Image 1 (cartoon, rainbow, N blue to C red):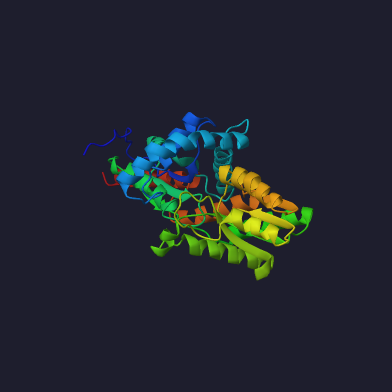
Image 2 (cartoon, one colour; image 1 turned 45 degrees about the vertical axis):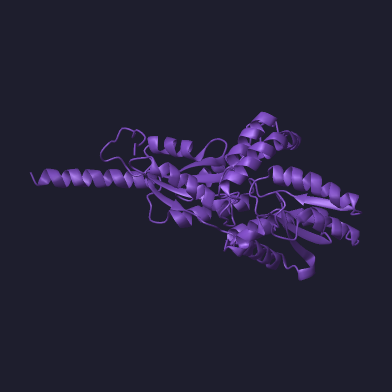
Length: 363
C-alpha cells in the first residue's frame, strides 16, 4: 500500500486539536450538471442505497441521473440565495460561530466543516488539518439522530481517509445527541418563540427525514431516536398526545419507508378540519432543500389546497444561540482529556523547557 506524502515533521511540536463538523452536502450550483454530479456521488454510497450493487448502478445511471437532475435543479433554484446553497451557508456559519463559543469556554480549538458529498470534501479538509499539524480531531456530525445512512457514512469517509495516511491523528467520533438536554431546549425555544409571536396551532407536526423501513427492522436506531427526540420536546413544551404528530419525509423509490409520511398526513389533517398546523424539522440542523422546498413550499401547498387555512414553517436551528451553546457543550464533553488550544500549547512548551532543563542538569 502506498501512503500520501507526510507534512514535514517537527520534533517537540505541541499537540493541536480540531473539531470537524460534518454534514450531508449540496450541489455547487442549482444547475442540472451540478446536481447530477452531486446525486451521482450521494446515491452511489452503499450506506444510502442498500439495493444489490449491479442492479442499483443500472437504475442510477440508466434512469435516475438522466431524469432527476433537471427536476431537482429547479427545486434548488427556488431556494438558492445570493450567498449560495442555504445548507452550505448555514453550516459554514455554524463552524465559525462554534469556534467562538468554544473559545469563550476556554477551548480555542480549530473548528472546520466538511461535506460528505460535494465540497469541501471530508478527505480534503482532513488533509488540510493534518498539514497544519493537527494531532487530534473530533468528528462531530450535524445529525442529532444516528443513522447508518448518515452518521455511519461520515465515519466511513473518515476511516477511508485514514487508510491512506502514514500517521493518522487521534480520532474521536460523536455518534448522536438526539436526547441532549441542550439540543432539546434549543428546539423548544424555537417553538415557543414562534408561538409567542403567532399563537398556538391546532397541531404541531415534527417532520423527520425518512429512511426505508427495512433499516429499522435490521437494527438501525434512527427511528427510535427520532421518537425520543419528539417525546422529550413534547414534554418540554407541555404538549399532550393530541397536540403533536411525528411524520417522515423525503421518500425515494417504491419501497416502504418509515411512516406516517409527512405530506399525506398534512392533507389528511386538512380534510379532517384542522385549520392550522405548525411544521418543524428537528432532525435538520440547517435549512436546506428538504426543509425550504419540500416542507415550506410543497407541503404548504398540499395542506392549503386540501382545505387547511394556516401553515407555519418553523425554521431549523441554523445560527440560534441556544443551539450553538448546546453544540459547544456536546463538543466539550467529547474533547475531555485532550489539549485544547492556547492553554495546552503553553503547557506543552513549559513541559519541553522542563525536559530540556532536566536533560542539561544531568550532563
